[in-house]
Image (cartoon, rainbow, N blue to C red; front, side, top):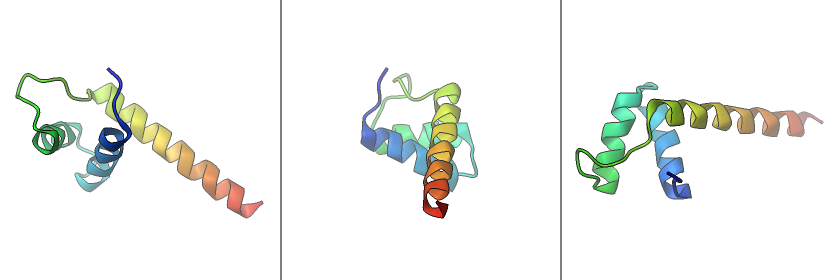
Length: 67
């Protein structure tokens, strides 16, 4: 499933504010977007891939400033 930018941003922010706990992110995502208990939320792999992408973007932006 494709996630909106708002959902992606919420997931990344929740991941860092919840001490990188995937379960806490999933619970917060359900509460924030009013998703039922059996509803579809980002899985562990998706959360970790978003974290990697976020870090890669941050690192590339930092490298660009140094040049």
